[in-house]
Amino acid sequence: MLIGEVARHAGLSASAVRYYERVGLLPEPRRIGGRRDYSPDALTRLIVIRSARALGCSIGEIRGFLTPRMSERPRERWEALAASKVAHLDAVIARSQHLRQLLLRIAQCRCESWDECATRLMARRS
Image (tube, rainbow, N blue to C red):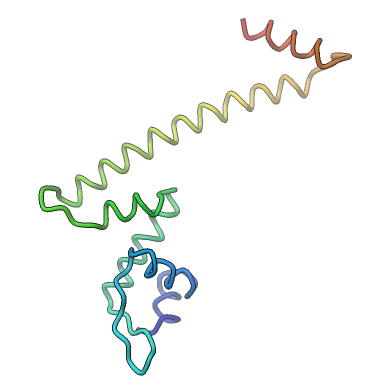
């Protein structure tokens, strides 16, 4: 498949395909007449990469679970990644809930000065 076709099927832009190739997540395809010719395996790999990026995985994390290790099965890599991402999301959710509560309190503030407001907010935390 040519780059436009593989990109379209993977739901990516051609520049994203070239980027993943450049950073080593996608093997360099063979060239026919100077044009990239991707194997069907490249499409599968790009879909995995796109899905991992949608989950918030970094390029390094994706490289880690796409790079085969003799002592580790793919399932073990996915489980480790999932556990790490769930823990990260739990922390983000907790922080977001705290900020939401703070913003709701600020929106109801009727203080005359920042000092008064800060004092009241600190008093509510105790």
